[in-house]
Amino acid sequence: MNRDVDVILPDSDVASEVTLDSSSDVGRASPTLKGLQNRESNPKQRTRRPFHFQTTISANRAESPILVDAVPYDNAQEATYSRYKYYQRLRGPAIGDDQALLIPDHVVPSIFFYPYIPGTVPLTGKQSSLITIFAVWNTMMGTSLLSMPWAVEQAGLLAGLSLIVVMAGICFYTAFCILQVYGIYGEKENLADFPDLCMFLLGRVGQWVSVLFSALSLLGASAVYWVLMSNFLYHTVKYVYDLITTTSSVHLFTIDDNSSAFNLFCPDPIDNLSYSSLLSGPLFRNGASTFDKIWNLDLTVPIYMALLLLPLICLKSATFFTKFNALGTVSVFYIMGFVVTKASQWGVHVEFNDTSSPFYVPLLRSNFPALSGMLSLALYLHNCVVSIMKNNRHQESNGRDLSIAYILVALTYLGIGATFYLTFPLEKDCIEDNLLNNFSRSDTLTVIARVFLLFQMMTVFPLLAYILRTQILYAFFNSIYPSFSHVFSLNVALLTICVIFAIFLPQVGTITRFSGALCGLVYVFTLPSILYVVSYRKQNNGHAPAWVYIVHGLIILCGLLNLIAQFIVTN
Image (tube, rainbow, N blue to C red; front, side, top):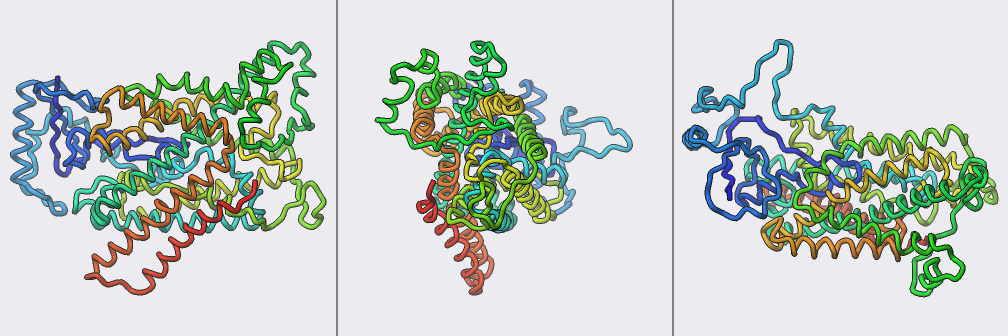
């Protein structure tokens, strides 16, 4: 077998990290895949290593799922590798633009050179501010878009719009605190990502807390994905079944009860499934058709999804699924276009004074914490903000670029939430936590949305499972793939939890707001504030003014109250 030996090439931007691009909560879940693999091959070395050298040494490398940037072994390469080590030790840490003992051009392998074309900008391995802003925006956009109109309805119009602005401001500030602290210690202490920063300033406990709640956020996202995928799969198959078995096109388009002229309807409230209600479901009900017994959303479809996806998430490598990451961006724009199209057809339906009107819009409701809890997850970028922003070509503009990205995210949530809420032509409390549930199964745009989102989520879920298992297995076994039995057991446990949520608590809004409030308390409110205070004291000989403690103490208090308030929200 082969063992990988990597070397740092000083002052070189030949290679850059490959981050996971996902609009459905994957990108924000973990450091890069390559970073995980580099850490696995050499736990003590956390930096990028552009020069990748293979030597033929007998060793067991079964735990490395992907071989990145490998080049064939030969004697010339081994000699080049030795020269790299020689120049690197002579050069030592480079200061600024110091060219002393820089590796000569004739030593650098030819594969690192490319023809110069006049008028083009040389490659730097970094991305522009525009790409960085879009990456941050795209990472935070996800399934929360489907629930944002429901969350605004829960809070009331004025409270909902105000909360989005306030929460975006708080989340931006705490994410910027992480960047500031990382800017002080990241390069100097050779820290790769946020958990390493917690380890350096807060010790082993801080690192374990960051890893634990990062895994919990992934688990919450997985449960939300499972509920949505089960819903989309059920309605898609049911639509095809109706097409095949229904002869009258008129009957097909009125197959949903209470359907309106806009192919809209107000679904019955979803109760948490109990043992008694399970027995009264279509699987055990006399008179139910064979199809309804085999294909029902309450029980069988979530289990079918588990049987379908279990082999995929047990694959040793998840790189195949990264090829579909661009679908996340497409899905976000489709949802935005879907809402704008429907809103233009409906027109505005708003009443601020008559409380008996079906279109009455309150400015404030007691359920406003549902929105703040959801926003804690919808605006959650904190455990991958370092990985994204350190690839910015203009590091001095990180604060500006991050603020622009958060403004765009807030405007997107404001636009989708307010537009759907103000134009919805039925009673406002009919708005579902998955807005597609308000549309007839036969609505053309809704059918397209469900099929497209189902495929997109089925390609993203294996990435979620992969990142979750690498975090957990590396934390406990110091390996991202200790054995197939470890991976299989962990995946079975993950799918069991997801299926239980999909059967007994199929409420996207409830899962999102609780997981967001819990993980947000740690990752959005607490850890960044503590890191900033500890760093400030460390930079000022153990002293800090009172405002530092007051401001960051209030931020932590807001996170705690946000979590407590989730228990007083009524469905």
